[in-house]
Length: 267
Image (tube, rainbow, N blue to C red; front, side, top):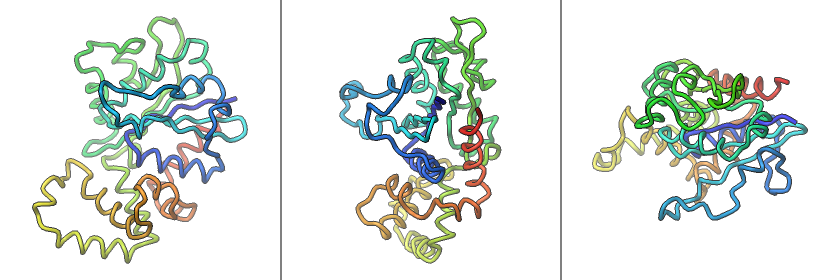
């Protein structure tokens, strides 16, 4: 049995990777007794309180399985939490359980940075105030895309960063999604863009090249017209925006699909 752990920034990432897995004929696992070791250790058995917060809608891992392969997707709820969440997840596993993991991938947006710059940024944020290691892992090893367990000699977990949009240049997953929406709902997307031009500036003050709020707004508007009352993540996963056709017509999306496919077929 092969086991893969994906840690992502947010719910859109979960939705798109889920849809890609579904197109690869993976099935979502919705029963805890169907999740095999070591991934069963990642199931949340108790209400996942964080301090005094009841905001736990995105804390539950998503599991997929196909034949002898299972994938767990963890939503870190923000790029600054990627390494913290990865560390907390792996702390749940014993050494012999970590040995069963075939690969760990951290997926993130490049934003205004290319891949190498983004990896440095994530590592610096992840290790802020923690000197040169987080529990079992060192800053230098993660910078080199290696998960080496400090206290265990000659043992590493296969590990990589994948930086959207194309694992090389700056950009965001939302840019890829808007490209695919333009393929299948171009007229609606155009009208949404025209509508947003007429929105008073007071509502657009936080829109910036530094974030993806404008892009998220366009996606939300298109999604709400097509399927009112449905969350973006649900619509992304269940819509026709991500399909075999749009994947073949989008270079960046095809790169993501091929990357995941290559990982999951390596035996």
